[in-house]
Length: 70
Ligand SMILES: [Zn+2]
Image (cartoon, rainbow, N blue to C red):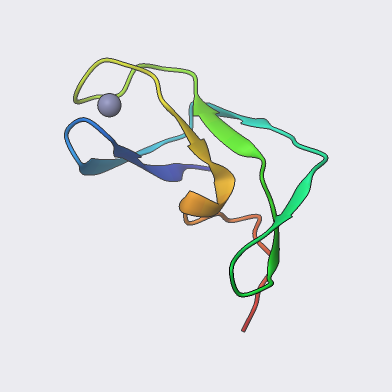
């Protein structure tokens, strides 16, 4: 399975299956009162554009694990 990441340096998206999910036991609330996990997703291989690994808040990604809110 691949996630789609956006390189924050080049602002281009790429998909990668090389990532780990850093679980968080905290559940945060957004401004609309929706709860979300503040887990992070960290790429474990260098990005194809800038050569750096990045990490992201899980809710910033098109997360395949996210619960449906529709
Ligand atoms: Zn990058």
